[in-house]
Image (cartoon, rainbow, N blue to C red):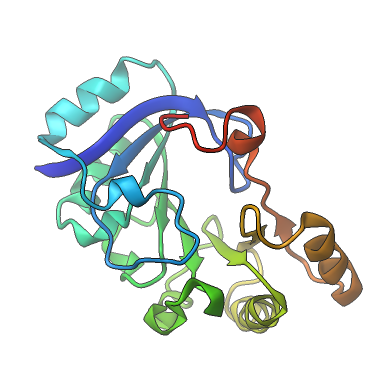
Length: 213
């Protein structure tokens, strides 16, 4: 049983899978309260669903890519079981997690997108850096950057990640309506970083405050 905030079909807006149709399973609850959070509604709202009910909803969309997100999905104990069921059903599965939870609980064939928190989030102390050696080559690490301090924090961690697994994709994203994309791009180019700018495509396509997209 899992508490689910929403299940919807949309275009993947972030990560290296941006642009692909994707079914999103947004689970309820989060252990953090980031300053720039754009899914506050997922902290409390939701309904209890069995794994069979969730899979039945996902199948309606006839889409092979599924992302399990939140909130923070790994604070619910049955999330790894949901991911295992999705994988066994033939789906390509992405998990977006806030970096505070042990990703080794999740099947390694799942693509774990670890959103390590920068200082402006108010929660960088929650990062579990033991997740760095747990990363597989197909996993991704994301940093949401709001200012120069965040950028330098992310740059240092990127170097640390590359010493462990050079194939991991590192994503730099600007806080929405915060840091300008031009500025973030300039910093990345000046420092010659091997990172990918992570633009929130769904917010460019639809109203950025619209839910279920």
